[in-house]
Image (tube, rainbow, N blue to C red):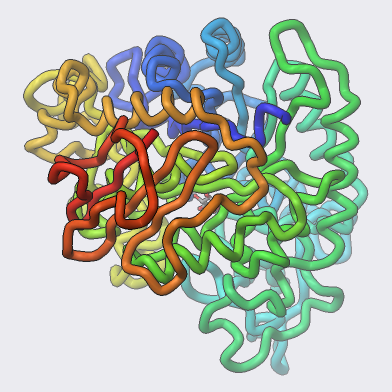
Length: 523
Ligand code: GLC
């Protein structure tokens, strides 16, 4: 079995993880100094989200230089220190690759604007003439994921496509220059010692030939609609095969994993398990986030349906579970309580396959309320102030102390990248460290036990003790059985045919019974 098939990877959002220089923004040196937290947690790998030069129109996912380091986060040498420290601690390091779009400040886009219609420079992006008598209408009906049309008009009258913010022009993946430019980006980071890549919006790089309209009504739920002309196109797969060959063959520097152990994880918002399985065929990517699991409600049937659709893994690829990310509402808030989020963690960590944790999940952080005037997410402006966006899960981590900035920075509390709420003293790492009932210690224990009881086949369905209609989930992973009670009444596990002693529970047990919104691991 390869390490990535059942790995636990920790998502590190650098601006909100730890600050080393007192400016209130987390940075690479701060991350390096705090990597021990992730190693002690028991994770196997770290995925660090973009730390590249960026005007920050979309939290760093608008990249002006794919092989640089943002000056406020550090230097290339700081990145090298982060990599070697991770490797010293036995952690693999994965970086973000954002190939769908660049920043509008990227040299390619500036050149495209300067060179004008019909130029080779414009051919790296998706520039088109508009519709209507004077070209005053967008070239088609596509919508941006952040609201409004996916097109912006430039001074000479052409329009360019952006599936996200206007500051994130989409690249033309049929351009040979774009293709070879990104192969160079991959080689650059491999040479710097990374162990893999998380590929941003991996379902969107290619748009259907001719950029046809999506058609009336098609935008209602674009992510669940694989017929959208800008999602899930066939041409993605030869590209991912090319990248896989590159990863498998490009030499590895000392300290990094050998070429064939490197990983690519697709952020492909494709909800049909059979379609998603196509991204993780043996010669394509290794993992693809299971967003259907992240989006499932706290409902036994809904969760069971997602698990049954994902295991056994339709194409035999690694299933990759997650409960949170920098884009999602924190599970404590989304699922409705800390008790449920803790139970969900034991559910996820018992399932065969890999799991991704997002910083702060292990502290049980709720979604933070960020005041209007501090919101940074482009969703807020683009939605006409109707959607607050994702900043509530991007608030700096609380490490210690009784009040903001909770050890995150030596700077002033009001200097932090996003403001931290009052009342977070009980969530700090320091406050939870020595409390055996804390969420931090629940995660630590779960990761240790999970490692002691590896699933024999991370792509196979577990042995179920519960039936699809039951208000609970009970299944065996190797020698360990997980029982999650989603209903109100206490549940005696012996009655399900589960024998053994409880080794970990997300809340207090009632003798040999699991109360509602609680999970137990029995060995
Ligand atoms: C991905 C990122 C998200 C970003 C978007 C556009 O979904 O996770 O944060 O806004 O891509 O780059």
